[in-house]
Length: 550
Image 1 (cartoon, rainbow, N blue to C red):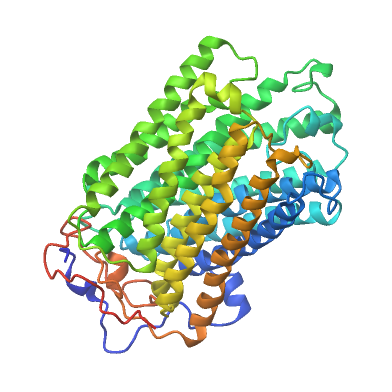
Image 2: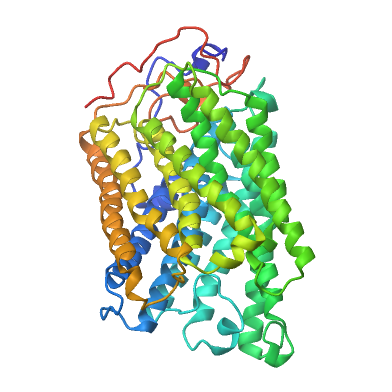
């Protein structure tokens, strides 16, 4: 048991009014409560995720045959653009920070809300407006450039609705910046008395580091897209060599944002996994300070490796060598985290509840994704596999295997706190295992066909690659079931799930010291922190109470 102030004074004579007690649409759309805004984000990102999943499902059916006839070439290009744009900017980037982070951060630090509640609501509206433009661009014909919007194709040659989609991403970027600013100031200024930096839960360290990247990198993306739009509308030569521009400049600017964006997507998952490791091993995370420092190190070094996306872009061999070395260096803090999570498991009293299964799945998939990243960091190997399915598999092992498994683990972990309801544990475990199996079936064959030379983004392909595509599509079907199951049983739990106690996992942390769901202002009195975040040395219990088993 940690040394937080006793029960943080949340028990009053009458139950406090829950943040969910008011039901009008107006109360939700005009709310400044961080918890409600987190729920709004959660609903929004799940919607975008489902749209993007349908797009890739159609693509995988098309790829069952080397000369598939389900889609036209142009339609295929539009589908993978839609899939990439929605998944990256409207699901992966906001999933944990904007949805789970918005809900949990103020409660975790003992605050009543974020520093700027109205700005927080504005962030969600900007996010929705940006998503609206992207969906509108699909309805009027779609975009065929790919989610990277590489020039000069996007700025000069594509006759699809590039500007509409780019404008949507541009607006959503401001949502990210405002959310990042809000989190940085909230964590800096509003921590409960006694919560020093090294008494913060590791989830807060990861979101703090993520917010720094959001604030510093996202404006670069905004400027890049703005310059591309200027070239497309007014024909001013910035990236198009025919107009005197340089297309490599676009790649430098784009990847200066987009490589750190990889860590925007995966760092929050790492924070979630740290919370889950402590809660379900009943131990302090091994090397807490190193894991916290690794989050900051990843955020800093992540800014220096964008050039490894451009080894074949004609940049100098010396620049390539520098970016190669830096890419190997950024693997070090990631390796520290994986090592310390593994060490935390050693001699831990491990409880295989649903969030923990997702956390273990995260470690396995992230490790494979990270190790294959070392292949891509090596100049000679990268030249061989650039623009093949090897890159697709690596990217998805990190982003889908890492970010989504972390998000699902966090969602299940905090679901009782968010909704006040318990979900059926058996179905949760089943979904986590099905997801892990389906994921590997989907993406591991892509490593093989990428190594053998199958280029990515191709609509038709050589017949010798068909067996790998069939395996991938079969795996995607299993993966789809793994994702659909939680949608069903979590929605079921909202009405039929048992009522959740305040601390169903018997975990440490301020968020478990208030009721489930929390009252409007989180705590009646400001809690005081007097000890480390993961003190399981007292009142040790090997398993949760069992009330979670439906």
